[in-house]
Image (tube, rainbow over all chains, first blue to last red):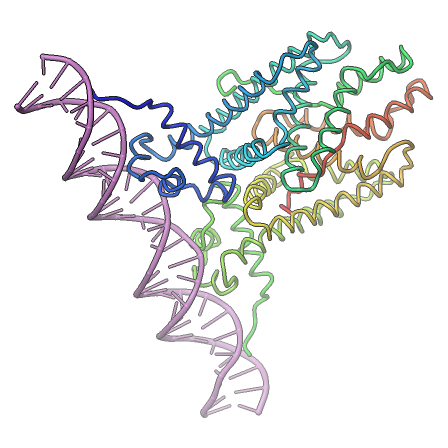
Length: 221
Length: 221
DNA sequence: GCCGTGACAATACAGGTGCAATGCATGGGA
DNA sequence: TCCCATGCATTGCACCTGTATTGTCACGGC
């Protein structure tokens, strides 16, 4: 066998091109030929590494999520759970070009997944993973009176919504960050506002505000 | 001239077919021929009423938004601003088949609009309209310490995020409603929790929590 | 040496796409 | 009655799509 190339690396290169394309011109502009052109290769090569378009799409989606995951983990090593949560959620918001691009891609895939259940599964898994992590941190923080799962789900919903607003230019980036911080303050307790009273409020807030909780379907994540 | 048909009515009929298609198989499945087939007419007729595909898409998007708008207004006539706000936001969440369909369509258009600025404009307008209405109601309610605009934007972001979660089956419908209600309680004040203290908290909460702009508008604006 | 296999390239093909052009029936104004 | 704009159907076209097929070339084991 004459294998001299790193197969996975090649696939990621193509996935990169796909993401650029999806971010710039939408997922509908993604075709084998366009991806090949964007990557500067022949369409034959794309076919060589992905037997079908669906396989290519699935791999690309996985790549995006892996990338977000990796960046979220490797960002820094904050001491407190609260900082950890903040770091993670900030990595999800479209605050720079890289993340804007990623958000665009994820949005495109989100709409696409409404039709392709296989992709939906992947997205759900990633979300479940994040929720689990967030819930764990909330639990670790020891905020009393809050259901960690609910809080995590609420945070994710908030960040999702904020991301949408920012992407469609209905909201400024700074405002989104401020909104997130406000919610975090609510959840973890700001400073100490008239103890006893301030304590009671946030718990109720959390329980209500971050509402749903995902029933984690084991299979779909 | 021999005009016996209601042009607008015909166009809405076609837009209906388009929406059904978009909800069921994604916006990528929307073609002149498919829309025609779904509506049970010839492709020639579609071309007769929409000179271009883009014109058809734009009209369909407008139709969805109008529909949501209309339903939101005509739902009922609740007495309090809070009820009004709740009614409106509930109309945006995908809580029944109709709204699930609308949400799917809006999501599809949202992703599509990231590429077609003309559509994005329409979506933004609708969102601005809703935010203005919500802000007015919040102002009318006379909640002190809250910026009505911020609160409105926050509510929209929350509902947007919740809608996404529900659509992608990461969140149960009931949980979404509970989440919304919790946020409303926060905003308008639940009952009266240790007055003075309970009063101060919500204001801060609102300002922070509901930050961004609304994504949820089913209409796709 | 060969030869097989992996890494690509080029091409072919059936089908779908948006859109233009054309055909044709009909019914109201002249 | 003629006339022609309207409402719609049919057809055609150039292009693009995903995929299958085939070809070519370089390498590495035998």
